[in-house]
Length: 254
Ligand code: 13P
Image 1 (spheres, helix red, strand yellow):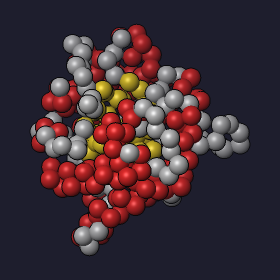
Image 2 (cartoon, protein in one colour):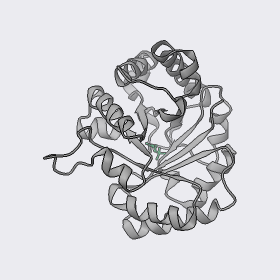
Image 3 (tube, helix red, strand yellow):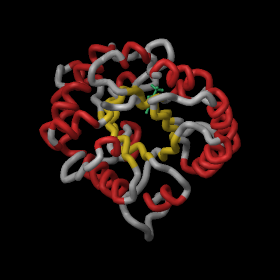
Image 4 (tube, helix red, strand yellow):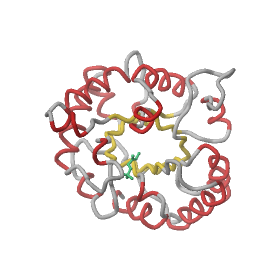
């Protein structure tokens, strides 16, 4: 049985003080609890400590995630953040392999695989992103493309507890465009992802790994995705920047 997950990726939005206000608003919206739904908030790095403090002070029912981390332990890597630094401030999740990091910052599947290993060694749950471009989709090669990403991103990973590894399928053409994939499009690829995870880790582990959909997910459409067998939640960009719309998505998943 997989608990559903709603995760918010604030991307490069919200200053430290704005982030504190948003986290406080979300804590208020969700003060009745989130049932069996795991909720994760991923602010920019400089906001992490502020959001961690809000979570602690308000006993807020959501977990803290980073948007990126480096795979080395420490050292001369200017501008980077080590997994141990995230653990130290209370982050328990970290997005890796987002298409914006792959596209703008040249991250490769090999980097993403190393990041997953480094994070897991520190007890941080990776939310590992995959997804195809419009060009790949129009060529009808989307399933093949995503399966290849999954194989490379998971190579050599050891997963004892399947709740400690999360995959997010985010078709690039649906991110921030208002163009959503249909629930059937999401199921086609999320189903193929689970089948690949079963080939890599065995069926039992694959059945416990959450596979999220991301790309213009919002309160009005999230329920349709969640009805699908292999879609276990959403990774939310724009709609996570307002406490009421993000909370509405959590409530739709409960
Ligand atoms: P939007 O929800 O803004 O389309 O962003 C999706 C996303 O990239 C989440 O990581």
